Image 1 (spheres, each protein chain N blue to C red):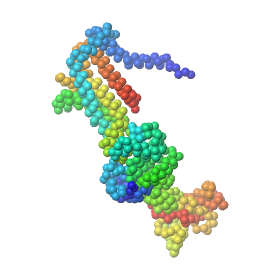
Image 2: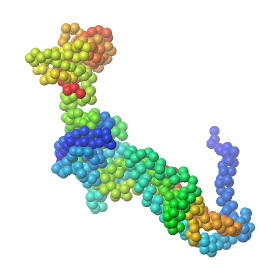
Image 3: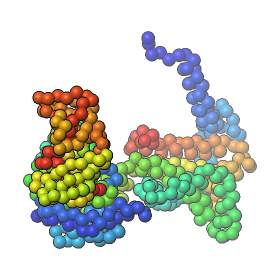
Image 4: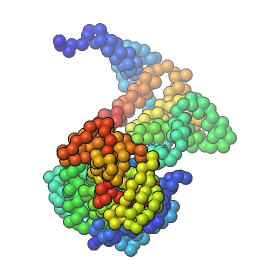
Length: 262
Length: 353
């Protein structure tokens, strides 16, 4: 018996990959097309549309806003999420079971509902400035992911290690940073990436909270598509893809992607 | 330096349930005392209270005159060895051992030298650069031991340190632990549920039940002279016969058990006998005598098993099921009747539970 793959299985695998990669190839091609409208296969080759992104000030502004919001929201969510995940796992026996469910509940709420509620409460009733409202919205959006991912990492953490450190003379707060954090590092990084990507791609929440003068990149893409049908949109998409690939490559180089599976 | 540990009137609760009930314990300087009992008896709770991971409801813990009761865990300066080793997975073996020294501000070079010397003592010097994940269970526990000893703690505590190891290694390791503890003269508290382990390693053993110490004594005394029925059962007394004194005539006491069984016991040979007591023996302490006139418990013999030094009989008596031994020279058949005669120096007069 040989271990040869069945031709049908090979064919099916190829089909799945085509299905997954097809749209990416089309977007990539369209971004390079030397036409003033979206088309595939590309007619002529140009990098003009990439240049165009940075010539449209709305794109320049929203890329910066999106990056700012994604970084800040992720950072805040980690600052809240790491201690929350720690407490939920450390005191699992003493705490009621529904408490950890409470932290993941926002995932179950449709984002569009979250966005609308925030519009009502934060933007309208409390008249919070737009940037701050976006930041609050995105923090709420990514927090459950942070708590969830870091909790998963802490679930396999043996807390007697922490006690060992304390018994050896390390104060509890210091122990958290020197012993606990280094051992859930992969979880924290995974949470960071997941939260960052969730924030930078978000439409539903941002749709309600953006306003005059301040918007995020996905909302700007949406606005642009409504008015123009040139390949700029495709080139922005390619840019986002390359950014994601770059992040993944850096992670792969420094940590190895396998840690995401841990 | 070595110091005595004094625990006085320690009471602790988990929520509303009392897990430790007015526990007092003295461990002399350099002594190793084991806390022995089934799970839930409060032995680990006692250890965690002494370590400072739990707060007592009342009571005090003193180590060499220093009151630890209110001191946070990281200031207690106690060496701890855990069941699951609790090594730091992200630090090398050397850094694991050096961790406690680092907390004490020992400089890098001196730290590594002392960690290295300690690893030498537990025979792991060549593994200093490995991560704990690459070690076997026995090696991990040696690292844990080195890590606890290197800070030269006045008190060393073990929480079931050998229960994750296989049987052969357990025996080797407990000898090693005992030797290191003796050599350093470190006052030690050792928690285990394994009677053989506790008896073989300890100067004294505290047998615990329901948050209290039932008896604290040397292994020899516990094995031969248990103070109460609980301890007797724990150390393998098969026969526990509840009795009441019916008559006293000088040295002789006539006592009754269930089913109308009466025995005449001499206080000169059995020791002082209170009005209510439990007569406890192992099978060795109850001799099968075919003479129906012998002063013993009437019994119908059941299954006979061969022990090499004697025959052992499953016996049905009016006082319940008992286990007794009989001479090899006179084997008796199943179904025959006999008397079970208690042997004074193998019997204990116990406090009822």
